[in-house]
Length: 110
Image (cartoon, rainbow, N blue to C red; front, side, top):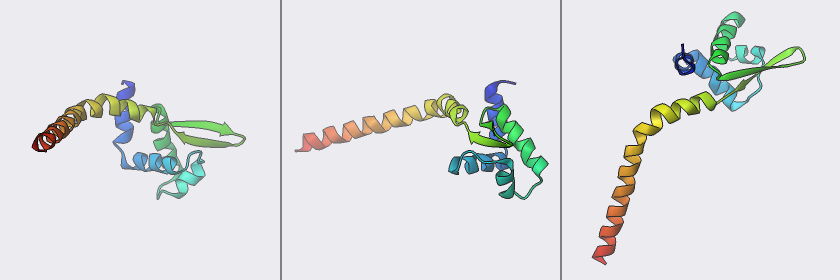
């Protein structure tokens, strides 16, 4: 499985997306904090976090006896650059060309 496949797999689950949203709002949360936001067992949350860590979307750092979880947005950005940017480029170019055309037409009418 490629890194990209792991990211898509991780993002395919709504609970994992919710965990990423929580970390986006406030990074550096403990398992207990994350678990308190979900209606599932501690073990269930740990399983989801392991998938997110395997995809590189979450980084866990030990701080004393606690393990803090941080969002790593880089894999999502790489997905965006590869799969979204190239499809929106044509639309952006078309809008820029339309703007130039309309401005030229407006200038010609003066």
